[in-house]
Amino acid sequence: MLSLEEISDRLEIQQLLVAYSTAIDTRRFDDLDRVFTPDAYIDYRAMGGIDGSFGDVKAWLAEVLPNFPAYSHLIGNFDVTLDGDTASSRVLCFNPMVLGGDGQILFCGLWYDDEFVRTADGWRMTRRVETKCFDKVV
Image (cartoon, rainbow, N blue to C red; front, top):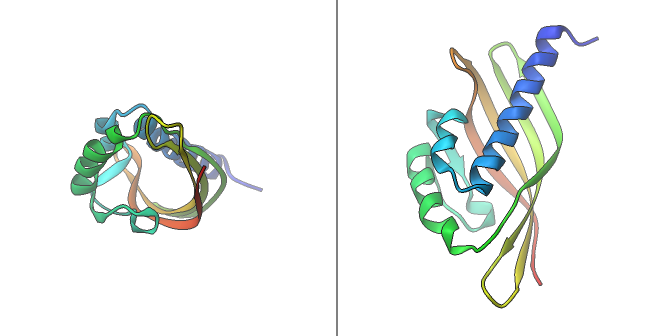
C-alpha cells in the first residue's frame, strides 16, 4: 500500500510534468524556472533539437518554438520511481506541431526520461532526455 507521502510525491511530480507541458504550449518559457533546477541538463536531440544546460535550452526554446504556429503536448503513462528525495520517471508524449500556413502537421511521439530532486520549493526536474518513438509529417 502506498503511504500518504508517496501518493503526495507522485502527484506533485505528475503536476510538475503537466506544468512543463503547459509552459511550453502557452509559450510562457519563464514558467519553466519553477519546473527545472538552475543546473538541469536537457537533451532534445532525439527529436531534432539541442542539448545543454537549462538556461541555454530555455533560450533556444524561446527562439525556435515561435516559428511553429501551433503545437500541443499530450502526456500520459506516468511511470514514477521514488527514492527518498530523488525520483525518476518515464512519460509518453504525443506532440503534434503545425509546420506553417499550408496545413502540414508534424506528429511527434516520444518518451520523456526525467530525473527529479526534492528542493525547499518542492520537486524540481534535474534532467530531461527525449527518446524518439516516431515522427510523421501529414
